Image (cartoon, rainbow, N blue to C red; front, side, top):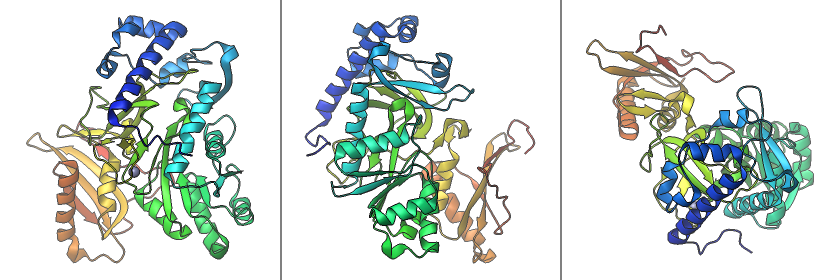
Length: 431
Ligand SMILES: [Zn+2]
């Protein structure tokens, strides 16, 4: 049995999206006072939605809408139809609560099952779940997906590494689902305790936390697994499972029959061309309890305008490149520190720490200087070549000119918390 509709083509997908968009707008207009007011303020009636292009006329919703409408924001069904709630943390102290009908729970399990299918699991697989359970959506989603798919769930949650090791060996776990930091912790623990020969894990599915390419390859190497997959999702969108990279790892296939993903310039809110990074804005197409219309995720990614070598009919977006708050504008280009990180991570001879310094030159033009460390084995004599190489790569990948400064290993500060990357003195602020 297949959960992925392999016979879906682009035309049919667009038809499903339009039907879903029409349904969603009509549903919230009729059943949610919050949305009705929003739509009326924008002078939109459900019958105005006649093509997918019309999504552009719909108003946005943002985190503060969910927080403001606490405790049951976006609710579009009577309470007797709600079978569960989940929550994610808000920014102002109040949680964002999302309602689920039985159909919502079923749809979620169905598309989560697709993730496991895309990752190449079979019913023989044993899936150890190390993400949080309860109010948070992660554990519930991973587990429902396993059960729907027909593999065996080993639901543990974020317990200690010892408990995970014990269960991993005794249950003969083949797939491990966790955050990237938990997977790395496990990989190190397994090595430390010399358990490699007893571990049968072949695949790791990482969710709930952003991580770098280098972290992913370290996990892959240490655990000796075949694949490390990246799953996307948000509590606002049912939970994790809205898409996964297939075994070609070319991008994250997302379930475009359940969602419309738009990537917009976070400042102008206009669509950016495929391949260019921007803010991911999501509309749900079949969600009943708490539907989303043009929800601003503040996650940065891009739509990948290419077909994957696998036969999945679903489009792809890139990994999450950052948050809109991290973005800066340099010479009219929106740049995210993670894009610089990505370029740096593919260049030999430099460390993973970096800083971006922005200043105004006497000529009035902006100048970006990227400060990076040479590796411990690096030779100062190679700096000129390395800097030139790096500047070329930045120009090629991000389309801006920059100046590169290479400093000795250990020069840049390390912090336990997320390091500060961008130092902007263009408006006269001291850095
Ligand atoms: Zn693929």
